[in-house]
Image 1 (cartoon, rainbow, N blue to C red):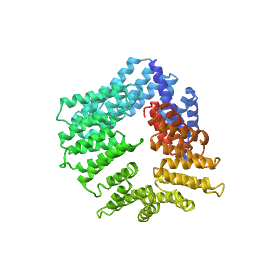
Image 2 (image 1 turned 180 degrees about the vertical axis):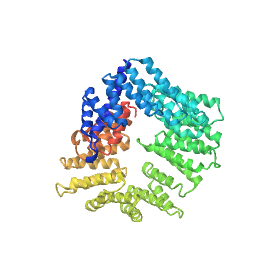
Image 3 (image 1 turned 90 degrees about the horizontal axis):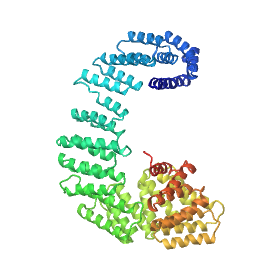
Length: 616
């Protein structure tokens, strides 16, 4: 049974090679396959090995290259002409005595003929013939793997290790064979021994482990690596390489709390001044684990001002707090007050400047958009903009925030002035494109649709995908709702509602949207009205009502411009806020099937597979 299985594997491999030879023909007529070769491939693919044998024998005798040899041997084994196969292989072995792969072929012939003892003797003779040569050892081991004999490959590498003692240990090769056998303990041991000899191989060891261990690996499998690392850490507390690898393992498994414990220990032992912990914090932030990130920054801050990262840790901690309180959720007044106190505390200690310009901007945003203290925010931003040492880009970002706050405060043209200043100063940069888009919205709000659209048409070619998409969406809104007639009233009313929503005048915004529906019930802007209602309710934290508006949009306007947006936002609501994962999966999947060109496809597919439980 084993012989038959191996024969089938061998024949399947050669069939693939034959197909490649048949279809990947060179374009040069001089290099076209001969008629004999074409017939050989044709008969081989058809399973007529006796006929294929005639042609491959002819081809091999004429040109004894490896490709013809392999097919020739496969055909002889397939038709059970074992004596002839033995003669051919032995002749090759005599011609190339240093190439022990022919010994493996000879053993294959004996095995196919049912002479298992003879086959094993031949395999062992090949191993015993090995010379202290790395290439020869690897080639023989790979040949054994090619006939599904991992144990013989292991024996080969171990013999090679003895022959090359002190020069090369074949640890990585052995680890890979053990991985094939699913002997993960032996695999881990081999890789750990590499680090015992030379810690400089840490990256290579991590690369080897990464494919077999991690967040998506079997729990028992991960436990093997964890226990071995813990054992070596305890056995050799002064050898920090294993503690470092243990921390890396926890990060691969996304166990950031355990990684934090190791990072602190390594930081203290190596006196790294918090650098490793700062790096871990950055990883935690990108993975959305804000709690552990905050603990990382707290640790570095506790080191005191002697730490090089003291100020940076305070700033990054404030950034994480802001993201934690504002992403995918509504922010309460008490949470906004907490953010304000945190920002003011850091600013009081570090002072205003380039490093804290981002904090000033976030603090002003909190004051204006969450605490409704527009005057305080405007004053803070204007003072910061006047700081002489500011980098131009930081000053520009502060001006953009000031423009937003002025727009929130109803000072529409003052906001436009700030946007225009940034656009002019950074005409060919992303900051300038962002400013141009914000200014386009100002003109949209006041009803100058043609000027707004002219600016938006320029932004459609932006290298920043989000700006380009937003410009496209707003341009389409204008085009779609002015194309059918010259009546601008519905769009004017919608623009006013959009501005009111931006200014947190939600009740007035909703009343204005209701008025459009009553006065123009059949207007093309109906889908945009539903989407704006969803945005208002989402901002208020009324997720059920927000979902209801999206459901209406999906049911009535699924194939309009906002169809994919509505599906994705509805999926997010069910996923993150309403705890209805089945419905979230439904709408993520519909994005993939109904809107294959949507910008949400990549994120929707990833989230859908995560909810389904796929190993990514």
